[in-house]
Amino acid sequence: FTTQETITNANTAKQWFLKSAKDSKFVANHFIALSTNAKLVQEFGIDKANMFEFWDWVGGRYSLWSAIGMSIALNIGFDNFEHLLSGAHWMDNHFKSTPIERNIPVILAVLGIWYGNFYGA
Image 1: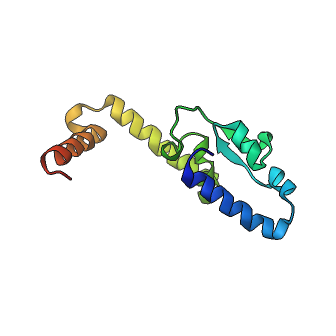
Image 2: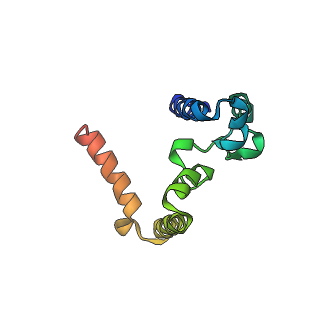
Image 3: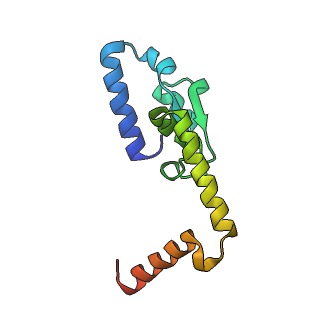
């Protein structure tokens, strides 16, 4: 609830919802929030009991592995979300245990530096 994109989407959904609900009191029980800011969530009208918190150092748009992943899980189904988590776990293990010359995340990082510094890409 501190990012422009997030609050714009939330307000758009709220306006759409209120066209049918007609009373903002219904927002409290029909919306959920994924946020680090309980005060802003409650000011928006969402019951704090419907708030899924995550650490304030987790960048919301970057961490699908935290509570932020709820929207993904709701969209693709929890079984598929568990497959996604399994793939992430596999890649974490690959990163920790694979020699640098065959380590995919390391190779991608080095390529990123190479293309950025030498090709301006």
